[in-house]
Length: 181
Image 1 (cartoon, rainbow, N blue to C red):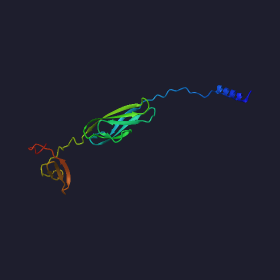
Image 2 (cartoon, helix red, strand yellow):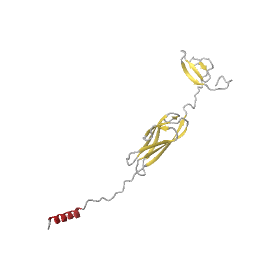
Image 3 (tube, rainbow, N blue to C red):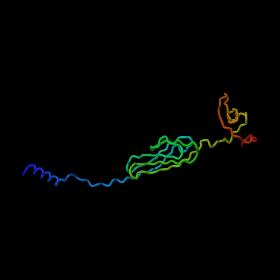
């Protein structure tokens, strides 16, 4: 027998015995679970016009995938919109605004939307008037012994050294009303 023929038979025998290599059977890809949103937290809890609020989306992914965030709103704007914690600059007009965050693990079926409605109020909608204080033009204030002065738009009070102590906006009251109980 020739050496070449012996080599081929030996190689063929080895291939038949051990095979050409294992072909692994295809495995099913792991099922991906969508992330879950536990809550959307806003800080501070009161939102004023033209202010800044910190928002945080508390989300979890049972597959431990990295999560991507995309925030949108129908008023105001975000200084960053693709992190779990962002800053929302509230609109200049009071109203109810809707914040939406999409959390995505960028795998099949791995998205979820979260929503939060936030009421934005004007900071100076309400004026608190003391029940037990009153004054008349150029009459000393009984609490501080200083005098109030009036002009067309405001009422101001100077302290004893003549330095501005308090400033108030003036509202038109009926002319015959000198004292409010």
